[in-house]
Image 1: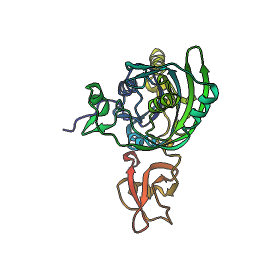
Image 2: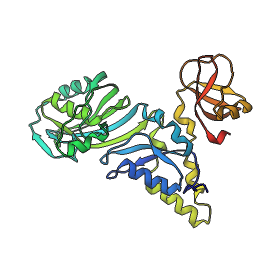
Image 3: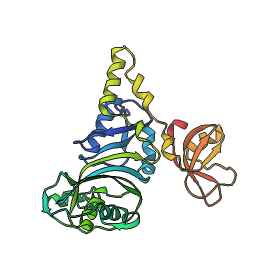
Length: 311
């Protein structure tokens, strides 16, 4: 007898505004519980210190999380000047204190110097893995392990505020995937000669998703309770907040196929269509999203990730 999955088979994406003080996985589990979803995954962890956009993918939307992981992100970050910490943020221990002797002009110039492509070494307190263990586990034991530098791109970085009395700055940074904002702040502190660490980090955008579409765990819970109070199905209000799963794929070229071809595609069969471009394609069958595909060596469409619900 097949084991029955616990929860509802729902598909879609909710833009969670992760609160400070909990891990991304805990936020994911709480959202999954509120939705009573069978399956869920998040798309790019935020540190417990950080808040902001954490797209949660439910059901079949989990097949496309990589596209959100790979997209660019925008952050608002506040940093304390004059102090360097073990983790490059306020969760770490202060290891060095230096006087802050900078001018506004110098600050603006050094902030602007981070624009464009560069190599970045990930922090020892990141979730990247070395020999199967996340780097932060080694760091907590005082063990330094090799880290590969990665190419990053800072598309824009602006100095929004400089509080000379508190020696704090606030910046808005738009970056490519895998960029560590803590590392940028730490590097900026060294460039300024005084040290710096993150005291507030908020992710305002992931890809094209705007900040005004975010919702908190508290708001989700309130909507759930509202439905119960009105003797309505618990999903009445929270399901309306789910975004279609193909909103994660807006940058992909689309190919249209028939409903009959869509059924074949969902079963993993190759579909013969017109001329196809190279790369990953969003596949729409009779106006309905059915998955992603690519051109095979014969120029035909083959499934890469197909929705089982399209069968």
